[in-house]
Length: 190
Image (cartoon, rainbow, N blue to C red; front, side):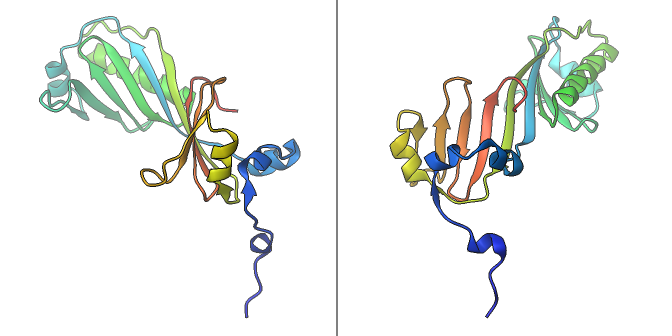
């Protein structure tokens, strides 16, 4: 017979409403949010010839029958950009806001080297996505009952509960395991 590990013997299923009322000292020790993806946009203020970009730039692909944008990738910082003919660029995959800004500057520089009069202008963070683990199971049905106007839970369609906050406007995907996915933030998650 093996002895249970300390954290297993103390594991209990708690109502999510009770979990939200845990004192700050406990929650700051255990609840750590890991930023996984930051999405930013930039407008280079010039129309882009997507065929020229695809033919002359490295790590660029363009198939107008599948998608109306050039997909370009950088290795450092590891990001992907969608470049549209209007001059708008969507940057995704950055792990920090600084890396997202740096990637936007690098994509702008690539366009300048291809003789487009691209300007680094109107950079904006559109979405920040992060994950966390509260380290205890969550009763999703209890959370749904207590906060039904903010929650959507259809276990036959998706195993997680969707919790939409109003202010700040965030969306949480909450799973029975205690894992959380947070998306919709426009400024740093704290």
